[in-house]
Image 1 (tube, rainbow, N blue to C red):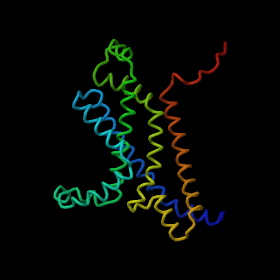
Image 2 (tube, rainbow, N blue to C red):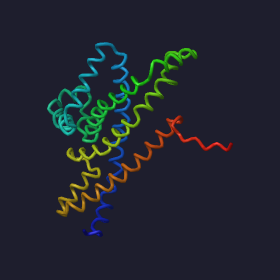
Image 3 (cartoon, rainbow, N blue to C red):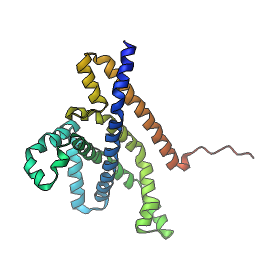
Image 4 (cartoon, rainbow, N blue to C red):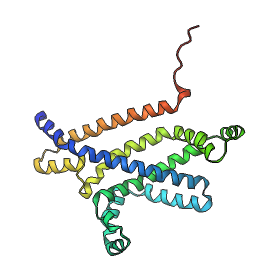
Length: 234
């Protein structure tokens, strides 16, 4: 183990971390919004809406993310004239946006099922109690249904966030120089794969640790009924 080389490797890979975080944050945010829409359609969209969401989830959960990324980046290039006419080629010619689209569509399929489970976990008694207090429509959804659904879905959604953070490493196969992309380039130059991947793994591990701590704080904040009460003084 050459620790001097590992330190140099760390300094080489560190500039790729902002791009990794940007890919993860963009895809998670966009995927979360899309997943919320899909889950609402699945719950209240009728037979047509449920059929569409089931087909979408089946396709994107049943095929590898790497294949989806290849199809978007390399496959859509075959339709370049059509994309140029539609004004979309400026997006699909960029590896960054192809990676974001692939990550977004993939995480939306998983997250929509998590959100759907959270929405269905809201009991009828809680909804009826809110209606008895005069709530209905958007107010009922915003004050009762959505907070409870988020609280129920957060542990599973936290796992999806971590998986998407690590899935950004696949963007290196379409020439994006994030942490894994820089690691591959350094390996090609130095032929020292072991030390380079040890450092890259440590970077991902450190970021994952911070994300898990943040998710624990959010879960604690959303679950006041589970907090430890201070001991009584009487």
